[in-house]
Image 1 (tube, rainbow, N blue to C red):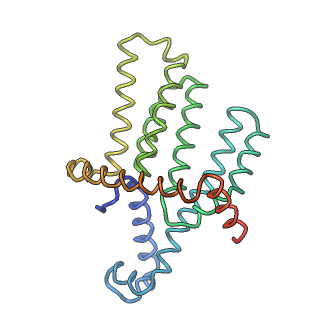
Image 2: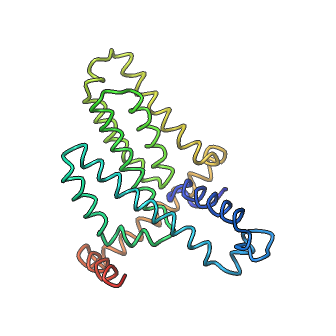
Image 3: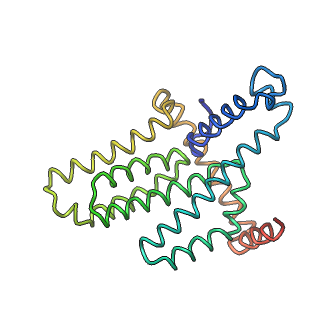
Length: 238
């Protein structure tokens, strides 16, 4: 379960690994008479790609559903339907639902976190805030930039009626509890991070540098409008 990619998160690897284990258990022929999954993968990668891409597609469908409920919660059923429709025909969403990548999983968990947070704000339920905080950690485990949802979560909680009614001690206690929930969710999703902290820091620096370098290359050579045209072109050929 240990791998060398930190920024991409660990949870998608575990989910895909569990799905592959389950499929090979229910249908041993996928292993091609080999003893291990690795040996079978080297012979024929197709079944494993199908499993991974199916999971990405499932997350993409769940993303559409949760976006409908989010639009309905914040505005109306019409807004929810329109939101679900536009994300359903989004070229970028369609592209990532075809890939064995954590992006659709990240989008879904972020939207789920936002939805639960606004539910908590509407009904002033502490348990919903705790669940939302847990999913902040899950989002980070899908892909580390998922942690960027944390400021929105904290802002919504701080401006809630529930927060205003609390004493200063309880406010600090609740905030610390939320951080603990986030930490717990991330730890459950990636325990190796805490076993080898030096390696984590090393890879974080390395992969951050790589990500920024690629970002600079994309901006210089493609540009914002060029990239948009690229995705439109790909969508037309699906």
